[in-house]
Length: 144
Image (tube, rainbow, N blue to C red; front, side, top):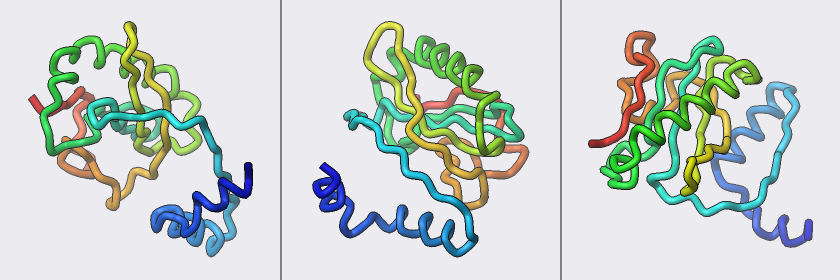
């Protein structure tokens, strides 16, 4: 099994390589958590932005396309993502971050955490204006 995993990880994706190299250079610990693979359609992925542990906005992760699946369920998706946001807000190891989240097809929709990203100038702000303090208004944004 680990041999198969090693084969799948060669060469490591550039993003993983950069993060690992940076952690090693800074003398920080590095942990890889492997989860069961789940297929995630573009409409199912969202980014939740936190500043100092408080949510400041939620956006669809794909800012370039309109997804009817989001528009048709916007109120349900917003509610599920806001409940999930309240659930994880107090447990974030990085208080100022973006949480990449996927949401299932079920009813009710059940979000799950994909990864956390530091909230800095390199972060893709999706449908918000950027990492500036005035750009985030706490809303749920999707392409209409």
